[in-house]
Structure formats: C-alpha cells, structure tokens
Image 1 (cartoon, rainbow, N blue to C red):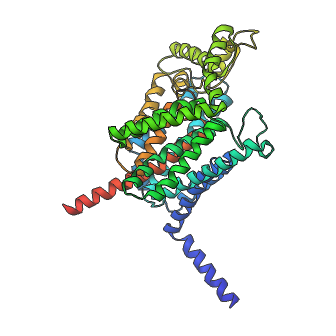
Image 2 (image 1 turned 135 degrees about the vertical axis):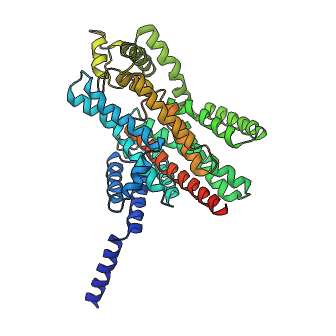
Image 3 (image 1 turned 60 degrees about the horizontal axis):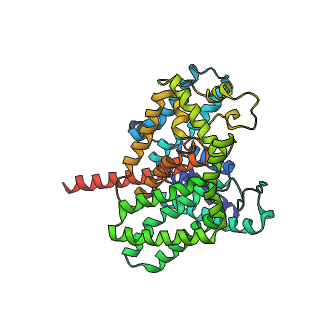
Length: 428
C-alpha cells in the first residue's frame, strides 16, 4: 500500500509539473503572496515576486508574449528602462552610481509579464483581497504599537504606531485600501446588500481612524480628498456628492477636534515652510522646496537629454553650500522628491515625455466601469498625485504597489475586453 501510495503521489506530482494550468495556479499563488507580504517585508515581496516570474517561464507562449509587448501600455514602461540604461552613456557619475540608478526602473519590466498573465488568469481579484486583508492586519498592529511601543520592530520613537517600514508607506497603503473600498460599498448599497456594505464601510473607516488618531503622512492628507473627488465625479450623482461631501466635512471636523496628532501633522506644513524661509533650516517641506529649485536649474542646463543616469547626487554636491551643514542649501541627495524632476534631471524632456506617456496610457486603460477599472485607475491616480512630493514610481514600496496594481487590474480589464470582442463577433 505504501509503495502504491508513493507511486500515485509521484504520478500526480509529475502530471502537475507537466500541466500549464498547474503552473498558472502557482503564478497566481505567488502573486497573492507578493501582495500580502508587501506591507510587511520588502525581502519577502522580492522573493515571492522572483518565484512568480520563474513560474511563468516553463509554459510561456513566447510568440504571444512578444506580440503583447507591442501594446503601448507595455512598450512605454520598457522604453523608460531602456532610456535609463542608455542614459548611463552620457552620465559623468561613477559607473557604480549609474547602474545603481538604473535599479529603480527595472521593476517596470514586470508590468508586461503581469498584464500578460492576468489577461489569462481568473484569480486577479484574490490579489486585491490579499493586499486588503494584509493592510487590515497591519492596521490592527499599528494600534497595538501605538499603545505598546515595545512591540514595534522599528526603533525610531518619532514614528508612532509604525510596526514595520515607515509612516509614508503605511499611509499610502491605508489610503489606497480605504478609497478603493468606496466602489464596492456604493455598488452593494445600490443592490440593497446592506450588511456586506456595512462591513466594508466599517473596514474603510478603520483605516481613516488609524490615520487620524495614530499617524498619517502629509502626502496622504493632500491626496485623500483628490482621490475621493475622482471617485465622486465618476460614480456618483450630484445629489449624492453633496450629501457625502457634507458628511465627510463633518467627519473631518470631528477628527480635527478630537485628534491632536492630526492637528500636529497639518500644522507642520506652515511651521516647516516658515523655518525654511526665515532661517534656511532643513525642514521636511523646506528641503523639498530646495531640492525642486535646484533640480529645475539642473534641468535647464541639459533640457533635452538630461545629465545622464545617476548624475543627480553629483549635481547636488556641486552646488551645496560649503560649511552650511545645518542649512537646507547644504543638503546633498540623489532623489529630488518629485518624480518628474527626478526623470528630467537625468534624461531631460525625453524622459519626461516617456514618464507621462506611461501615466496617460495606463489611465486610458482604466476608462471603463467595474472594480478592476476602479482599482487600476486609483492606483495610477494615487501614484501621479503623490509623485508631486516624492519619486514614488521609483521607490520600492510605492513602485511595487503601482506595478502590481496596474499589472493585475490591467490584465483583468484586457481579459474582459477580449471576452466582449469575442461575444460580439459570435453575435455577428
């Protein structure tokens, strides 16, 4: 019996190894694990992502995949990676710095692979569920850490309520989840499925309450109203917009009065700017203004092709104020904290055109209705708006949120479009 069981298990295993469907399921599993691990660990997310890519290879239809690369939504990200590689040729930075600066763009090469796979897979929604569930658990952990700081893996006492990573990444995750839930909540209310809608509303509110009373980034404070505005214009009637706006303003007023943490975060906008303008202090807002001012000057020096890949830090070193170690003007950085300027300094107007082509093409992909369209549109819109204050397409965490979100949602949208086309042809 034991030998027979072993033979049967071996045969089943061999059959699965030869089955394209089984390999496809494994790719889905690693995509789900990547999404679930992203809020907690960069290492795990990288490992699961690499395994996901490896599992795509054995039964990859190379001809169809190469055909899919001709789509503009795939070609534009590849073009930015190639531009980063070619840009190493005219940079005056050390070769190590040049190739190090290429690394943040490489993740964009996963976009065509994800789009191709999830055009064929029916499990894309589980990737969204995994990310949402993981962020919900992180929210619970954030509350625990806020009351019991010794539980945190982070050692920075300034980052209250942060178990892993940092408050910017956590705010990005919670904002995305909370605003994304608006679509299914509205759809469920229209279907009169009040219990499920109530549960999702409670989950969305839990993210907002955490940001109001534990910790929130200033970038999130700016982008949340914008993202809700996008949703309202796309999916609500004017009467509903007016009612919800009043409710949100009332909720914001209550949170403002009840949360010292929220008021403190908002007050830093003015105080940071004042200290920078009057005394040149390297405050968070002041440094950004200083980086942007200098980056515009670098861009003006080489507007067409830029200074080359990895040149940014050397340019800042060149113009740093000597002996001013306590001034914003003395700061040296390789990232100007603005995605457009980050690209413009290195690759000029050519890079900016490619960057905006990526965003515009991906926005156009998600013009339809449905959850996948809404999630994809939200991911792109969030990345565009937050990239005004950071280089979020190139940052590891936010960059992978973009790649996973657009890749999975985009594949689901393309699959639905192909199904509609086939149905129309069959009807004809």
